[in-house]
Length: 111
Length: 113
Image (cartoon, rainbow over all chains, first blue to last red; front, side, top):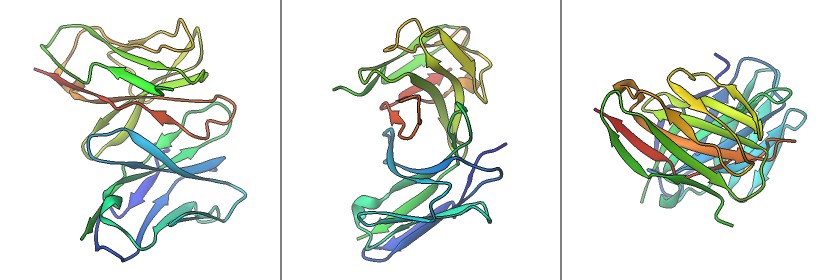
């Protein structure tokens, strides 16, 4: 399977702390995306990083991409209780091939 | 815009019954897809479509049929439901050219007894 793998599977932190989630994949990608899913809801797109980019920021989110290690990380700074959700990475390969989603990291932010 | 809508929100079926999960989007997106989400399995692609009249299989297509007669609609059909199809089903759409942002519907929770 080309599915990305998130690490850790679950993460529990205190409000105000930073949360880091990692994603590894197996083959060359066009881009890598991160999504958030609140309990019982659909996924929401957070950020996209292209294969020729190394780092991107969006508000409290910071994403890095290391194509040599085939890995990406998502950092959420100064976490809030509202950040409690599952986070998925999704990899985009070349052409019209669909996105491939990982199994997700379940983040719990305790107030 | 309503975005991506899915109906029904919840459905209970008996083994062997058939049903259609509806998905519609009003963003004029070429690309639409169906995923199922099971505990510990993430999202697995069932079928996808790159435009009206064009569909293709994903990772787990068995037991499901799709068609794409219009840009807006992408229904998923279960011909003979099985307990293994108990899951949460998500429909998503995006612009074809880049597939940069997938917009997801709220999901349909299906229970097959």
